[in-house]
Each structure stands twice: as C-alpha cells, then as structure tokens.
Length: 119
Image (cartoon, rainbow, N blue to C red; front, side, top):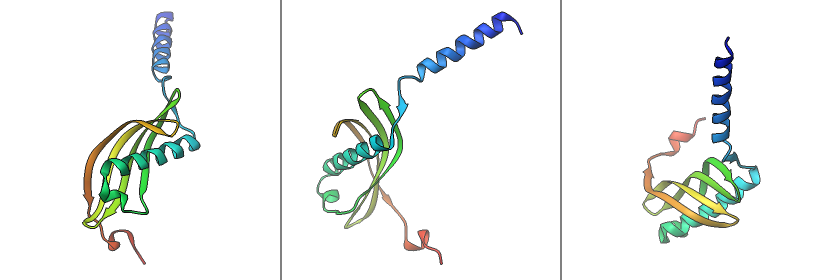
C-alpha cells in the first residue's frame, strides 16, 4: 500500500468524523425532557381535539444534542371522538421551551383490538 493511499484514506476518515461531530446522541434525561416539552407543544398546536385527552403517547424516533439545544423526531398519538390519530413531527427544544415545532397533520390510525391482542 502506498503512502499516498494511506494519506487519502486518513484524510477522508478525518473529514467524515469532523462532519459528524456537530450532533451527539441525547442522554436519557435530555430525551425525556425534550419529549415532555414536545408533547405539550404538539397538544397546544393541535388545539381542542387533543387537549381533551388525559393520556397521550409520544414515541421518540431520534434525539440529537446540539450545544444547549436538543432536536428530536417523534410521533405523537392521541384519541378524539372520531378515532385514534398519529402526528409525526420534529422539535428543537432548549431547556423546557420548544423553539421550533414542525408537525405533519394527523393521519388516522386504523387498528382494532385484534391487531394487538393474542391469547
């Protein structure tokens, strides 16, 4: 193996590692706090339909720490009188405040007890 090949490989590896250094995985505490803040913001954004619910579920698909902020991707689930809904979204959270919330409008969840229950 030539010196030139080793040098090119080293430079390429260094460039890849530096480009990925901007964001790190969240700690469990950061993920939990960001999830609570995003759920509250999504509930407020969705208005009266979601706010009547006492129990809501948020599933975090990814969580990245960027300096003081945490960026998460999530699915927010809630029930209304018409059925169950799932909303996908992203949020940038600093402390307990959501700086940026982006939601894709609700999709109705079609499921029955038979879908998830087996004896």
